[in-house]
Image 1 (tube, rainbow, N blue to C red):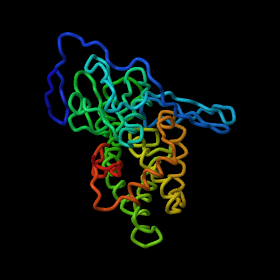
Image 2: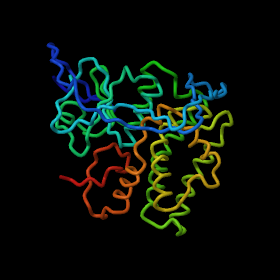
Image 3: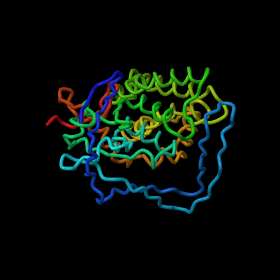
Image 4: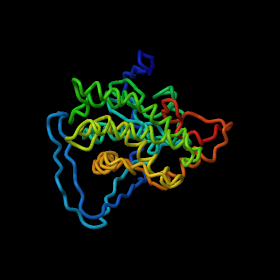
Length: 326
């Protein structure tokens, strides 16, 4: 098997003529993620993207305290055998707790591609050597194995999956596309602005103003359309790009700083309610306590001079930087 590097960080693979025997474990213990839904919920239907179409919300009664389980494969470690690489199977390599990988995972789910794109979770604390050597030399997640090529970078992968696979379109055209690209380009600034305040006291002027600026930008952006609670009115890749980070920021800021990002921001409050009704997103959420503890380690406990390792795509930040170099 040979590996060549093409443009845009795409890695091309020359598969051997003889098909290798599958070495991916066929039986293993499973990780079950549990979700609890209370009361009466709205199930949002995804449709082909059309800014003129009004959002339809179909009420679906569910039982009180109904428990829904999603069974996920366990993360692969340094002792795990690789799957049958480049055998025609499309694989999405992720870490369950990486927000960048979560973006692409949500896209897969919302496109209805659970049977077309196989999840391959990686344990980023104990990564298998074959992942860097045979799959993705940058050795980060997410990455997508498709048509004997491996691609990376979450925003690129979201667009790639949306345009190369069947399912409802999640990205607009025309003038809406320009606004969507503007919002996507702001994600880095949003992340850096919010996280820069984490080590300060939000009751102080500078951190408080920084937080307000970042979330007020979101509130203003959400006010542009009135035919739905989402950034473009209808649910789109823009919502997917922001969802994993707003999920974490809301939890951490309320728990540690006592700062409610929804206070005085009705559009953001409606967006959070709307995104939580998207099943493709909801099933990717991690345990809130674990997310809070992860952020505490990353932003409150790690010394400034402690070395970090980039193990999750970071776009200028490193959400898993609290893991020490070995």
